Amino acid sequence: MNILITGIHGFVGSNLVLALKDKCKIYGLDIVAPEKEGVAKTFLWQDLDNGLLPEVDAIIHLAGKAHDTKNKSAADVYFKINTGLTQKVYDYYLKSSATKFIFFSTAKAAADRVVGECLTEEVVPSPVGPYGESKIKAEEYILSHQPAERKYVYILRPCMIHGPGNKGNLNLLYSVVRKGIPWPLGAFKNSRTFTSIDNLTYVIDCLLSQSIESGIYNMADDETVSTNELIKLICESLGKKAHIWYINKGFITWCAKVGGFLHLPLNPDRLQKLTENYVASNDKIKKAIGIECMPVDARDGLTKTFDSFK
Image 1 (cartoon, one colour):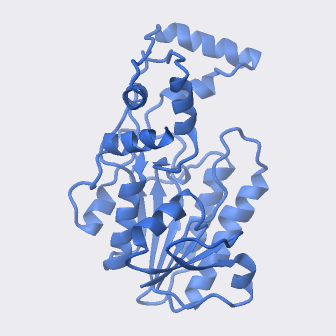
Image 2: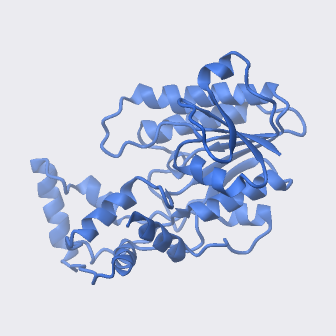
Image 3: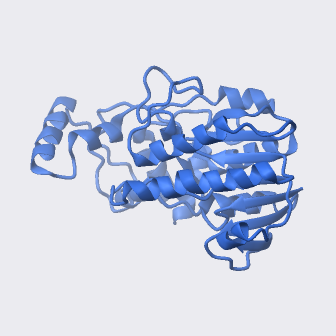
């Protein structure tokens, strides 16, 4: 099978190459084109405009503007890349001989906060902020331009993806814990789902090799993990004792309100993000590919990620 991966030099793209290089002939499409083991050739974006890309069987569209947690990116940048670039790549797919298109959206395109026990694919999307909004616009464009018969389209909505080479919020949490800084929010009990890169590459392999129905699919590990458990897993990886403070929730909430008034790091919005539940159901994708559970346990996957940070 010949496949084209956009954003191939990123975190997910690099891991997909490792997982698929012995099964597929892989081409890349990115802003840079260095040689990469397992990749036949990486093309530049102008090559797409000039019609220089080879014919492939499947396109995996990873390229996009990642969520800027510091909120320093202009909104139009998200829409230019996450929406506009997706439209261009998808239009190319519709005209090509490729029969499968996999678009990486995000759980944040469906909901910034989960209402109820868990997030399913049936939820009416209500993204907050340009990251999620630009991704849902891309989804809407794809869904409004149905492909010809025998062409399949998969929209994946992963929760936070992690694994070796990951750079993001888990790295920041790991850095804090490694310095021995106590976690003061132990009194808050929450549940979150993450997405191990190994489970993700397994699902992609299934989508490429099986006849799966087109549609929107959440992507997540089976098990939920609390922030307190994350702290403990990091400490186990470091061989340290976890320092979790169980301070009264009312007092912490009051401190956050004061922090919001004084523009301090801990404010009501940040406290909400750090302690909220965010659980997504992966039942639909497991049923589609015919499995009862993901191959990698959530805690095993997180431990592998934390060990890689060393």
